[in-house]
Length: 250
Length: 180
Picture 1 (cartoon, chains in turn blue, purple):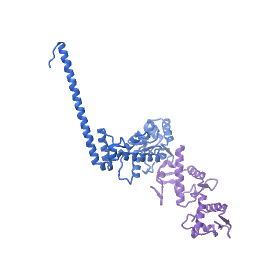
Picture 2 (spheres, helix red, strand yellow):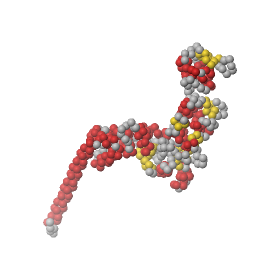
Picture 3 (cartoon, one colour):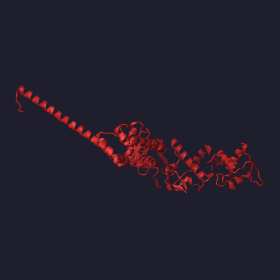
Picture 4 (cartoon, one colour):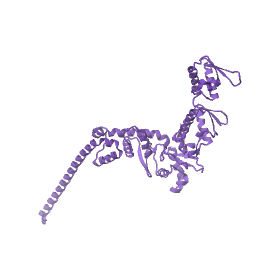
């Protein structure tokens, strides 16, 4: 379209812009429609897939995890409600609900020992021991999903990362940065000393003792004065597993 | 799980901090509970009636695998709680020896009553020594029972009119007549 000077020219230009805009909107609409169609097709295919591989999804934790990832990408949440296609087809809602209940149970049972903080690995291990008779294996991924569902119910369950480990918190204790740093240090041997904290984190004695006192009061730490070197050690049940034997040089 | 002979030790026994008296109340309470359950369980399994606090032979007070030992203070604290709960008694003022009642005296009394019924001993006479080491006692919990504990149970039953205790021919051979 040739641009012509004068009002006529301006009108033509405006008309041209309108047309381009219209075209643009149409293209966008076509794209969206296409995508929606693809998504619907994808969802249908996902449902078919789920039907066909129901057993694998139930029995194989790695497969189950991949399946969940696919669902997330497509915008499907098999756990969104206990009713409906997914829950009925896979019975997955029940699986995670049951897991959630068992997790709460274990957290309550171990709370006197670890103060309400348990490391994810140990939680899964205890869960597996409990479910020994079940044919369905349980992975850490499963635990995390079950816990995220617990969160939705407002149970105060949360997963926090400390260093390389994940810990599951089942009490409303708020840990600040100082506490987290101590917990991270403790992961190496299951315990720390005041001197170690002072040296590695460059803290004053006062700061270290304050943090330890809070952790002790919250039931997250226990003191140990029994080593022959006479140095007090602070142990953290949540970072070690009570079922793992502790070395003699504690 | 670590074992002492055939006895399965609980997992807390391998966790060093449990060998130090915990200052925080809730933690300490739970610690005492765990230790007391262990002590009662162990004593019951091995028919131990008396614990000497400084006894090297009592294996629960230290765990060489983790190089930890309960201090005298801790031992006394745990046993004192048992005493307060009526599951133990101090045998001396210095609190060096403790009588462990893994069955309460009342429970022992009931066991004696069962013993009498099971062996048809109503109206019979038996020496105290026979009760705790005679043929009938074999296979029952009465076999090898601490004499002090047995006497306490018998005295309790005497108060209830279930039996009568009398002195025997020798100084240390008391007898019992059952009237149940």
